[in-house]
Structure formats: C-alpha cells, structure tokens
Length: 358
Image (cartoon, rainbow, N blue to C red):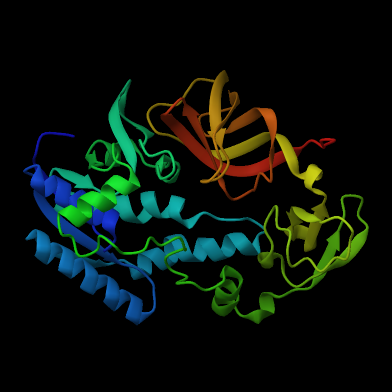
C-alpha cells in the first residue's frame, strides 16, 4: 500500500468498501467517503444512504453523496436493455466500473485536490512495465480483476486497493473486530439496479411488452422445434424454459436477432475452440501483432484456461483455447491473463463452435 495521503473511498454500505475505508484510516490516511446514488427503488436508496452514514459516523470521516442516476441510466441501464434486445448477454458491472464508478471518483479527487481513490475490490495493484498493472486478488474465490479489465492508466495511477491481499473471511473478521456496523451484512449477488427482479421482467417493464415478438426455435439444421416469445428471454447455454419435449435436453446455442430466431443444440454442440473479441482494452500497453501463450476467462465465474492469444490489431483479438470451452457468450467479456497478471479484455463478438463427441 502507498504511503498515507488523502484518499476518497467509494462506499456502497457493504462490508468490503467499508473495511477498505477503515483500513486506510487506521493506516494514517485522510479518508473521504463518497457514495453514489444509483437507480433503485426509493426504499433501497434510503437504506443504502442510512447504512453509509452509519459507517462514516463510526469511522469519523466526511461523507459526500453524489447523484449519478441519470448517468447510470444512460451509460449502464439502457445499454444493458439494448444488449438483450440484440441477442447479447451483457455484464453491467464491467461497464459500470470505468464509465461510472472510477470515472466519477477520479473526477471527484481532481475537483477536491485529493491524491488517491480507493474501492473495496479484491484485486492487487503493482508497478508494470509502463504504468500501473493489475494482478488477481489473493482470495481466488472472491478476486475481481475480471470486472476491472477496462480501467485505464488515468484511474490506476491514482488507485489504492486495500483488500487485495485479504480473503473474504479475513475481511469479515476484521470488520467485526473493528466494530463496523455492516460486518454481518449479507453479500449481494444480484445486479444492483434490478433489485431482485428477473431481468426479463425488468427489460419488458422498461421497454413494454411489445418487445415480445414470437419467433422460431430451431435446431442447427434449421428444423423448427418450438416457438419463443422474444429473444431477450434467452441466453447462450440456457436449458430451462425452452418448451421442447425431448428425451435429451436442448440448450440455447445461438441467438439470431436479424431473423428473430433462437437456435438450440445438445450440450456437446456448444463447445468453442476460438473466440473473437473487439473493443479490447489493454491495462498497461498493447501487445504487438502476433500470437502469445496466455490464459483467458470468458465469464466471471469461469476458471481461466490456457491457449493462444492472437493480437489482430490494437483493439481486436482472437483467442484459441487449448481445450474447447462451453457456452461462450457474445456480450460477455473475454479477459486475458499472464499468470495472475491482468493483460486486458474485450467484448466477445463471435465464437466458433466445434462439435465434440463425448
């Protein structure tokens, strides 16, 4: 951790961000709490503000509340909805970090002449070849480098991540020992702005039930097996809710918005050898065109697997897996690593399916 200085900490009211603030204050930093108002029911917003206020009062630090609801709607929520209507499966947390959380936190420290910014992410920061680099957090079950692959040097050069060397259990214990009011709060696993609602219902609530456009569910040969009620209700790898009677289960293999069609296959039909990703963001510096031995994740809970990273241009890559991977999903992020070191990531635009006889 850097030498103590002034730091603004993004506080959600949860145990992770709260302990990050507490650890920094204990280490001698001058800490400023910042809470962002995001789209949620008013009762949820009020509960979050109350929780953050208890934390900052307990720590004896100032609190700034910044209303980002309009920005969040435009930059995160609307693209989230649009993605489903295009047959993609979005990851709003990946988008939120560079576009909302870190961008606004960085602006805040510049406006207030504060040196650093901090969050409660489980990730490690270190000096790279050109600027600051990111490494996986020590807790392999909790580490969150996948979500931060779109950050740039502007944010990383000012960032502090106090929880990078801790496990979630250590965080809970330390928060309890420090008497933080949130030490026993349950951990949220849901998309924050949906507040427990099924995403299909959320999309329809926002855009109206007219988006329910019936279409065909076909197999890979084009044979019609059933009918869907809007492509926004399906994701790659989905098994349930297809309404197809069969002795063996079908899974969603592809979504074709241009013809309003959902394509299904057997489990063995969903393995991909290669995946293309665009709008690739390099955490430090871009690799030159060429092929490099690396590891890659295709979703947050996916274990990184080895393969070849082919750099096609400064923002386009192709990854060739050593072993075919299941249910590679357009709209999700392909994130690449060299060991524990994060190289960067991009949005999956295409996966090449190779059938496996299993």
